Image 1 (cartoon, rainbow, N blue to C red):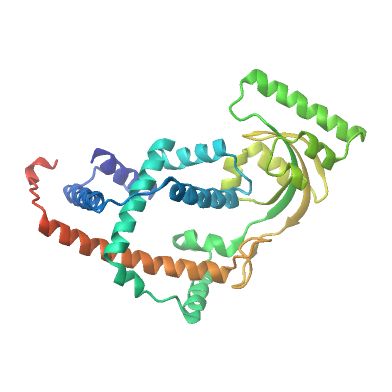
Image 2 (image 1 turned 180 degrees about the vertical axis):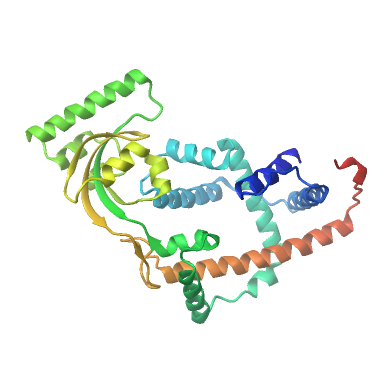
Length: 324
């Protein structure tokens, strides 16, 4: 319980509220939530619900793709795990365990209250248009930012890069990597190799080296800055279209970069793709958002009904004086 109490205090602090200790009512609410989780986990165990590794991996692949779109770069497994651990504040093993638990709980709830979810209707075109209009009307409102950030494109650049990896290397090996990158840049300057030849023969980004080093579109946003680092972010966005950089250091290694396209920031129309080259449009995004909200409401109702049923079957004693 102490961890959850501290989370409430931290959340209030981040919202600019006084970081006072959690109230007695806060602690009672946390206790009730913990009781509900225990009852559901017991029911999941009785129902013998299993979550396979393939299902976990499928969800991890989806999360990795989403993170890559947010930072504007492809991630290797070590980078993906590092981001997960930093974003969640847990170890990789703890994260996988929590995923497995959450999937099992949701499967039990959906199976138990199947009729609730089967009765959900897809959002109408009118609902989608109304939601788009509302979000666009609040494009600068911080309270809507988690939704409106997907209705705009920040400044975008598309780049090719030759990459020399330094992730988790010693300082000595990092220095060797820098010297190797400088040597490759001299080859480019001397004209002994083309940029494409250097990428294919020497780049250590296995995801892009046979695609001319194309990293796709990189957005000018905080996620990109955090992933690549200030040095890379600042120098790359200062390049002109068609310009090739010298050796640039990022959080992950050394790069030689060529900017192949630059796009200005814009507000998206309802049928625009979320990012250039993508097939998912703003309309698709809003439709999915509305479906998710409807499913969340159904899930909350289902959880309340199930917990009530389980509590009626269980023997629970709460001693108020023990909650301090």
